[in-house]
Image 1 (spheres, one colour):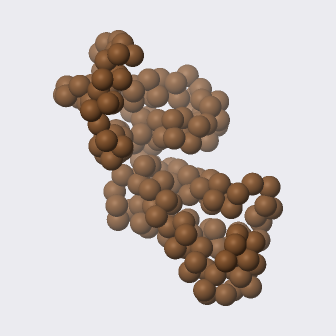
Image 2 (cartoon, rainbow, N blue to C red):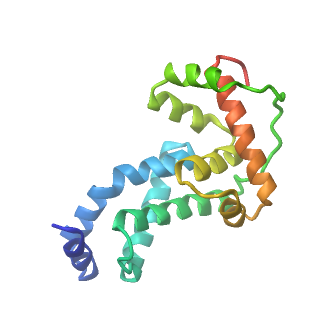
Length: 177
C-alpha cells in the first residue's frame, strides 16, 4: 500500500490502513518520544496520544511533504506538550565548570561510543537540557524556533544547548557530572 492509499484508507476508517500506518511509524515515533521523555512507559503513553492526534487530524495533511515528516512533527509537539503539562521543563541551572573541550577530545570520545550509548547518555540529561539538545541537534530547529516552542528566551536555548554539550562531553570522558 503506498502513502496515498494508506491515507485514503485511514480517512475511510479502514482498520487495516490504521494498523499499517501504526506499524510503519510506531518504532521511529517511540524513539522520538524516548528522546524527550526518557522513561519507556511514559514514552509509550505519549506515543499513543500522538497516534490519536495523527488519526484524528489526518484529514489536515496537505501532502506538501512526506507523511513521515508530518507525523514526526506531531510526535515532537506531543512530547513537548507532555513535558509542559507535567511541568518537567523547569529550565533548572546545572552546575558545570567552564572547561573548554577541543574538537580532538570530542572526536576521540565520540569514536569510542555507539549510537545507542550516545542516546542513553542523552536520555540522562536533565529534562530542559535534553529537550533543547534534541530540538537543536536531532530535529534541526534554530534557537529562535526552540525559544518560541518552549516559551523561553533565545539566549536560554543557547545556554541549555551549551550546557548539554558540556555535560555530554564530560560523561563521554568518564567524568562525574
